[in-house]
Length: 124
Image (tube, rainbow, N blue to C red):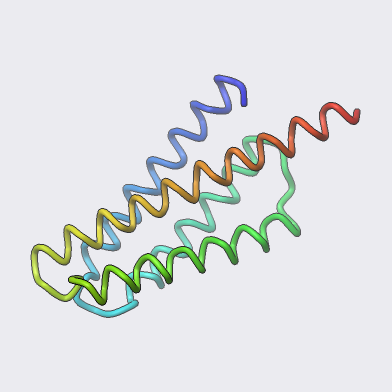
């Protein structure tokens, strides 16, 4: 990953994580409602990261989208069960979980797309 690509990914991922945190905090007391807002944020993040690496998201988009939704549901479900319903504390916990999961997904996808990009560049 070049420095320019890393910087672009940094902006995309952190912006998406912030948006996911806001959704997680705002919808903490409504079980699983935050996933409805967070998954589209993560999908848009994945598509935008793909563009940074010049990757057209056909099969990759489908696989990444599925991974994003799965990670979100598992992580959000755990935080909801544990303490998401507690006003104040639950909002902070959900915001932190949403941001952390989105960061993890974003950097994982960026790393994967960077490797794909490097392999295709070597073949040409």
